[in-house]
Every structure is written in structure tokens, then in C-alpha cells.
Image (cartoon, rainbow, N blue to C red):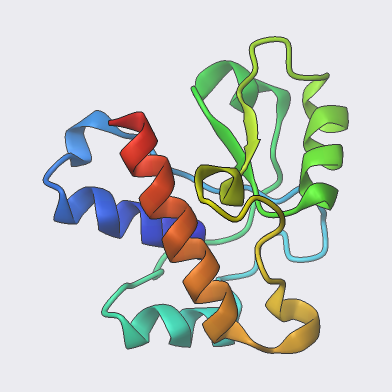
Length: 133
């Protein structure tokens, strides 16, 4: 969800040319699958499309390629540090660290509460865009 919310915010700000925004998994469970249907529906409620997206796994080359690597929770952070060979350039962050409520994004996988996840992701992406600006 965060990939598409961030793209939406950047587009609304007229700054698409300044950013390359992508997402990648730290696990293998969903590799090759489209965006999870309830997440797709939540995005669509706000006029945001996730069409054409299929899950892929993060790679070490992503660390070299991107200026920021953003995880949703502590589990993501641990996996990213392991998979990317550490974080010597200080690129890895939690999304909610860009808000006044640092911590994990609400995980809808277990709660099915995609509204709480939407609120966290929106707030985190808004904070990240403000900080980048």
C-alpha cells in the first residue's frame, strides 16, 4: 500500500519526475502475486490503482540503487539489514519514524483492519514527503 500511497502523494504534489518509488518484500510468501485484494480495495476507495504490481523480493542491488529503504515494522527492518548486508549509509528507516508516532505500521495480515493500515501508511508517507522536501 505504501508504494501506491507515496506515488499518489508525489503525483498530487506535481513532483513525479523527482522520485522513483518501488516496493519489495523481505519474505517469499507473496512473490509473483498481485497486491493483496483487501489492500487493493482499500487503495481503490481513495482512487488509487495498484494495477500491474506483482510482489518481488528485495535485493542487495536495491540498497545501491535507492536513497531510502523504508520498512513497515521491526521484522522488516531486521530482514532488510540481514538481506542488504547492513546499513552503512543510513538508508533504512521505519515508515512511522517519519511521524510523531514512531513504531510499526498496523499489520492488516492478522487483524484484517485495512483502515488502520491506511491511516498509518498515509500519515507515514505524508511525513516522509515533508521530510524529503
